[in-house]
Amino acid sequence: MLSKLALGAAALIFCVLPTEVSRSVKAPGTPDSAYLFIEIEAKVYRKDVEISSENPEERRWYFSNVVVQPEDVPTYSLIKQKIIPYFSRTVMDPFEARGFALDYGEQDVRLNGDVSYANYATREEAEQQRDKEIEYRKGQGGNIYSFELVFTGPLKGEETSKPKLIYRDKEQPNYGAAK
Image (cartoon, rainbow, N blue to C red; front, top):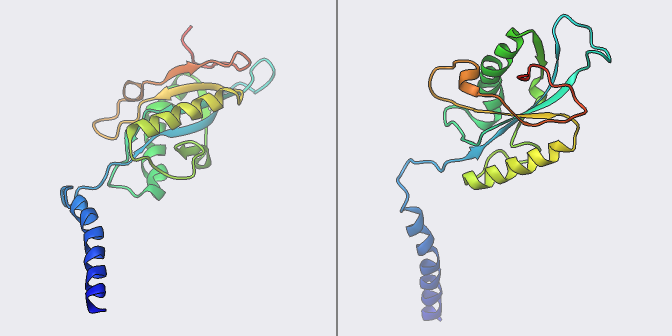
């Protein structure tokens, strides 16, 4: 009876040992990278002009590139502390300086689109989900832009974010687009 118990304990140790060894291969204190992208839904219109059939409101989405989640801000406060200030300085402010208004709120900013979890283990997974979200939005009635999300270095407005039209909905106006 004692030998069966000892044999069972040894078997358990050998089952757990490979996972412990594989965990210790990683450098201590090095967190796994988490990847994410940002989706922002906005309303765009001409400043100082009443919205009407001649000057309608444009529905627009902005999708960021896939980036590694910054470690200095927890996921739950990332939108408020990093994303909104970045987007306002590098996309919204330069756009509004050209005579247009770009309205969005905190509820219009989403980590990874409509997915319920905050990040991906690989860049490929995040890029696949971003592509799915863009395809889904194409059927929602609005123009879709990309922008570069960069967490390091000086912010130089659109020179940093590089907003670019990636899908044009012919039913929507497209304010501020290059002619």
